Amino acid sequence: MKSKPLASVSLDLDNQWSYMKTHGDEEWKNYPSYYDIFVPYVLEILKELDIKITFFIVGRDAVVPQNKIALKQISDEGHDFGNHSFNHEVWINQYDKEQLNEELGMAEKAIFEATGKKTVGFRGPGFSWNNTILETLVDRQYLYDATTLPSFIGPFARMYYFWKSDFSKDEKKKRQSLFGSFSEGFRRMKPYYFKLESGNKILEIPITTVPFIRIPFHMSYLIYINNVSPVLMKAYLHFAIFLCKLTRTPVSFLLHPLDIIGGDKIKELAFFPGMNVESEKKIKVFKTVMEILKKNFNLVNMNQHASALVNGQTR
Image 1 (cartoon, rainbow, N blue to C red):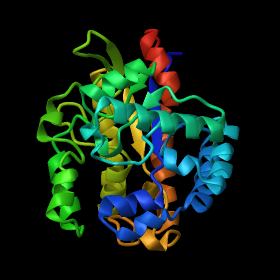
Image 2: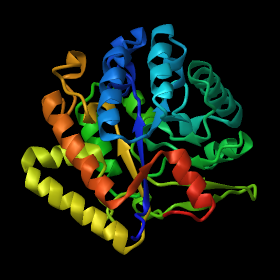
Image 3: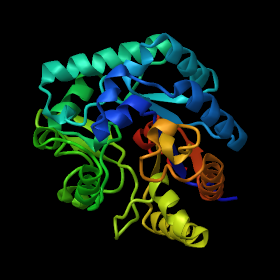
Image 4: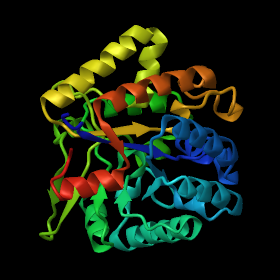
């Protein structure tokens, strides 16, 4: 029997405050959290599906005593962890080397103290990256980066986000790199090594988009399409999988908390796009998507996927 190709699944565990911060809501400064609601909720679903994934954690959440309980639950269930910065600032690509070392180091320490696991992978908030960030990851002995999104859709997503927010001109300028530039659409889709100015290199695992047309098919987009037509959503996903297999593009599938939970559970974020969809419906769509992916791929966490890529074992 022919073995299935590997595909990794990751979830950026952006907390309630980070969504509010990105949106420009001043109440984010009180650091409201939905960890106590979301973490047990998602762990139960993942256990039912029998899959292990990578949770990219914001360090500031990991220092909160109540959140440490939730993170320990994730660890005890056998899931993997990645670094998603300490402060979740989408302008992290404007930091200098000293600031980056402090930012990443604080996050690493907080995540390790909460979970007992060292992070070897990084994803920049808002898909923000640059050469300095990558050099810092190499210095800190990271195995991989998983930030880039090879799609032309970033600037349009940013325009929509700004339209829905109350940002000032200065705040918009700070967030100008949110979701990446149009040029990101020309980036390589398959995992590769970034060759840095210093001569160092680091493995990059891009968030997978549909080969050739480079449109995202991670969970957020599938939720939107499912609202139009469940049949269309399944057809779109099968089409994306077909092209990934045809082009031998390894899949890195991205999740966010709001893909799996609705405004009926997190009322404070009911204004966000897609939060009008009830949690029960999102769970149904999520399970459908995961079952389709499981039929086509051997689903692993990102650490396993990165190690397999380094060793040339992707099946």
